[in-house]
Length: 171
Length: 307
Image (cartoon, rainbow over all chains, first blue to last red; front, side, top):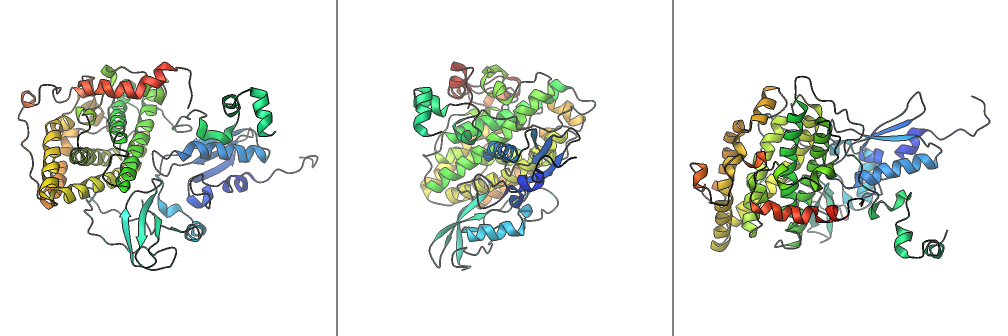
């Protein structure tokens, strides 16, 4: 290849820099939804992503954002594929992602629970988990609701600084 | 190009925002993409594609219709947190429905997309159970239905994780994580209502009694379910009953509630109810017609529209 054209930026670097539409402090790579990036022998850039939750309405936005970022970087032949298996887990959120979440006032997830053999156990609310307030660091917090502004978060309140906050719930 | 230039070019604000080829304004509507784009959707060996499609519609329609009923609760729940919780649960079920309906169109060779199934089928082609189409009642009714449905569906999806169809297996594995939260939510509310005041106990028991006649249908195997279970692709729902009873018993005893009497035969179900198993064959109560009027009206009035 001659050097007549300026080299295009690396496809993986471009794809990894695209941010999540709902959690813009995280890149899709931080969130763990970006599964793979490669270029086929015919020059198509293939990006595979996996949904966080089945109904996550951000998937379409992610596809569009990936295509646009790659197009702006000079790649016009882009295919975004969905991967369903293995299912996304909060364990795939990167260490950098945890730091960025906490800095944005969102409590990062603990390690996802490992399921025991047999049927899924019912949780009637007896289990107490320690979730620290991302504002003041206090462990005196309480869960208000296991559902919040997006499917991936639960709603908490700090009993020390009295601020509400969101916690990425472990799945 | 500035905002006023857009208005000059199109002459109206609608034209300006409807400008095609603008991926940045996805929220306005650039049509949905195939949720299975890039997924290998070949039908497993030894499985009839039409059977697989019908099975996906059974599971997908259950989720779609209950999602619609739950959406009807948003802004009516007792607390804002519950509006949000119910909306989240409805969204999860809608997402499962999208994947399953899309999978149906790949399995039967028709190439229909999720919208073709959701918006352009008559009631007689919906394969959901009667439980999910019942009119919304009070909050006790909503939670009793959600407890029954999510307990049944969690057991089903959990078995389906090992389906020989990798697409169904993947949808199920994801769904298990979601429905686990749905079941916990419903169970905790039943506990709170049942073991609460006389009034809340009465409402929880009333809700349970109202939905209980529709429980047997969940576990009556349809011939398609049996064929797919034999092929290692589907689940025979009659195998799920014992676990269902044990989980519901756990909730009811903690909630100081009792099992309502079970209808001995379909003859003892209310007159307006189809016999158990009929929903899977497209025979429904009047309630489904009302849901479909609401769900399909816009799409049928504007066939070329995208959103």
